[in-house]
Image 1 (cartoon, rainbow, N blue to C red):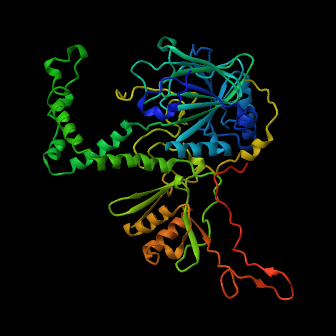
Image 2 (image 1 turned 180 degrees about the horizontal axis):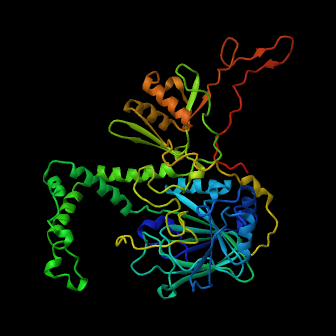
Image 3 (image 1 turned 120 degrees about the vertical axis):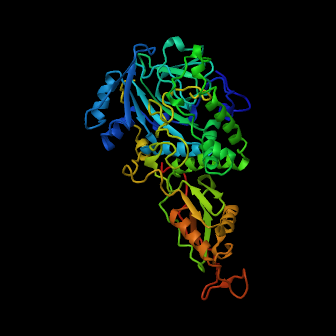
Length: 539
């Protein structure tokens, strides 16, 4: 158990040099159970349930130590009701709630802030485990996992990654004890404790006979590796080369050798057999290797930037919207000739992208909270095909459940002491809009002609100051007027009426005596209240 004195483990995720999990005491944060507890789950199911079977929750258990396999309880046709879930907890099952940020404002705010900090999707799951039980067998994940204990206690055992499988690109599934490596940490988490599990570390957790447990798993950095830049890059290079007219294009479009697919592959021990050479080491292998070398020579900085842009666009299309933001529009229309002040939304929620014949403002203001981590990764046109929660066998994508699983990248391959219910909790909980209100292709990108670029750059540079409508570059042009109207309608552009200048008597700053009184009349600047746009939760 080690903490770096100068750099956090997360700062070194990409290099694989984070070699030990970190356990950080956070008991001074107040009441962790306000984030989630057994009582909150019960209220959630009573108010919003039954929740749909399959996609909203999972109920599992395994023997202490992870031996004997895993069993899963399935709800009746009506879905997950408060009464049924309570019965399963009494029977020793662990309840995993997917996407709690849809119901809990505090978790929405937390995950949205982490997405702004990390520049990566952040998911969550809640695990509620009765005393004397274990929910999952040992496994490792393909995401970075943060465990926040909110109620009760839970004992974790963490093991070194499987040799050669550090920073896995896929989850592992349940692992037999014979595959567990050196144990690097054994710790009992109490409310307020935070445990960081780097990608690839094998882990398991169980409750003692005396304590039940509630913890939140926050996970991130799934499918955010160099391999995930290389995949769309090669796809793009191959598509461009295949449609060309040069020798490489003709080579890529050439047919495979006649009958080569009829030849069975050789056994490993007979890889040098004459009939086995027509593929990997023969003509096909030679042409493929030569074509790959030629394609990689075309991987210019611009091509690599384009591939990286795909990941960035996917992130903006699928991340959480800003919490507690009023629906658009935000202020009066930015019509030409009006005395209006303009300002783009917080830069943490938008980015400006310039293309060959367009300029694009990508943002997350219009994203739907209820869709977060529900759609397959890549649904917005970016590479990737993971399920909403990260795609592992546990829908963890929430990206990491009590942990996830993994595989090498390069080779590719407690019971209910219902306790007092925190009344403050209730103000946090809000169910998202009806399911399916928006899809993954919701309008998160505003595209304009290149003539709108100077005005957008001006608005970007002036933030957080307000810019007078009359001072916008080329503000009278139809293109800029349409751009401002589009941004305002989407909630990306905030507006407010420009204050009228103070009235004075024959000269600025002079005092005017009021008739019939010995006092003075001071004219103050406009102090009309304006609703503040804030990311703070309503509680």
